Amino acid sequence: MPDLAAPFARACLALDLMRIDPSLGGLRIVARAGPVRDRLAQRLVSADQRPIRLHPSMDDEALFGGLDVAATLAAGAPVMRAGRLAAQGLFLLPMAERIPPALAARLGAALEGGPERMIVAFDESAEDEDGPPAALSDRLGFCVDLSDVGLADAVAPPPGDLAAARLRLRHILTPPDLPQSLAELCAAFGVAGARAPLFALRAARASAAMNDRQITDADIETAAALTLAHRATRSPEPSAPEEEAPEEPRPELESEPRT
Image 1 (cartoon, rainbow, N blue to C red):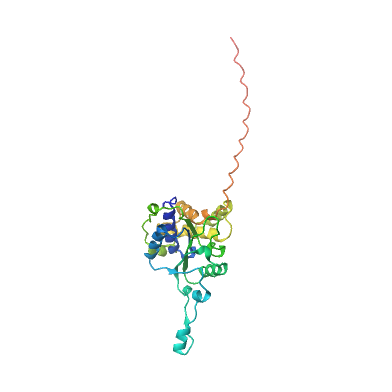
Image 2 (tube, one colour):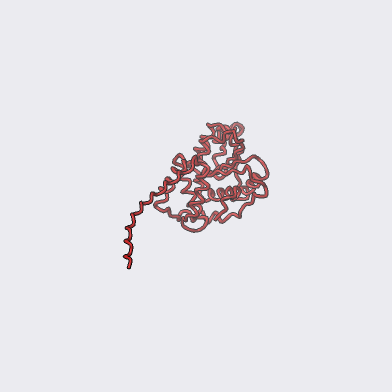
């Protein structure tokens, strides 16, 4: 089982799981620029394809494309230029806390449906500042805080065979009672919204595929730690202790007759 207590290992695991199942949306990393974040970025670059960089001030033309004026004048006919979101794969968004709500909504919508897209959003906000708008952060399955991680603790576990895991994902069976159990878990911890239990279910399936098995309790625990813990708003109320049945009075024994 992965070391879920180590934030850097959790971030690496989240990256692996979303590459197995891109419908997990992406990962929000709470950390300022520095060597720890650079080490995580190295893991991204060394993966199957180089990530595409976004910027919080990009306009619609840069994202979705538009008329290429220079090419149009040269060709004598309209030539359209593709935007960044014409591609699929992994996108990096630095300074995600600065993204305007309208752009956050467009990026969030781009994650749902269509080509496979995943976003790693670097949240550099201070404790008293707001992070990325909910229109984006709610659509990212994972969130890991690396703000207190030192370089010595930024140890990345070796990635598994993610391509093989993606092929195995289609054969992972969902236990019939698991969706209801995850919904009840979300309710107990005050996790709002319909996406959270879906993210937990997808993460459990991806974890099982990565470990070449059907879903186990370990996969469910991993999924809950990665997708639900940062969304929790309360601790579950302790169950009331069961009342013990009153003891029945014992019959008094008659004293033996003296001889």
